[in-house]
Figure 1: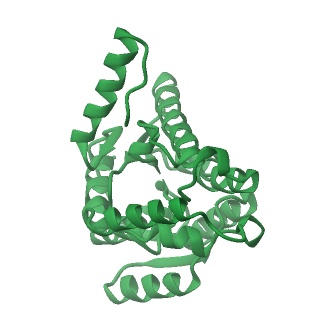
Figure 2 (figure 1 turned 30 degrees about the vertical axis):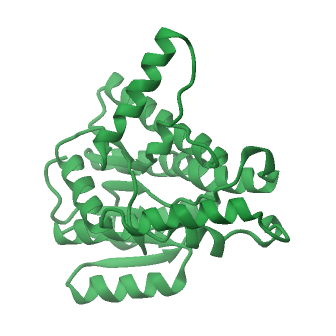
Length: 276
């Protein structure tokens, strides 16, 4: 996709973090924006910021685990701007918990948001984008979608699924000569509040009476790493550039792919699983 001026982009989880970085980059390129998020205050803030900067933007509260919310987001995009050219399935959550302690309600919640959200997005928006005769679908996975580290079982499963979804979609699109392209974002540590937001929006029925000390320490350590991570605005610019040049893989920390190579080497040599 070569041109952005006047095109319409839909971003889920677009009111903070990587999604906000995308919104700022896309607005800077002259795109019209439809931003969905669960955080009403953050939605109001991003609406004000981007409108003041001259962008055309509409926002909507959207729970990506609900197909009806994704359909309503699509309806708003079409009703407001007449169509959609770019979709970024970005909304995501994650709670660090050992696999044997992860409640089934948490498994369902995380996979509903992190994997079913992108599935619903592709299902609803692909026909709308193809009507435009050009466009792109991106989804935010993670390096966790390529390397399954410990303590993040449901998140790893969902993010691996997002990589598989987007790789299959891209191959299917090419196989039928569609003008639509696809990509997957696999970020490493980014300075976002995903850990804090995940806790804040965790459904009440899945909240344990008390988290274990180990889990609490791991969560704090993960957030500390994120606090020192890449600026989300830089990630947004990377996504814009990748869409413009039709690149499939968007890697914020490409050196981390060495861990993937180590895993492949061990797979071929002695069929062991090295530490991530």
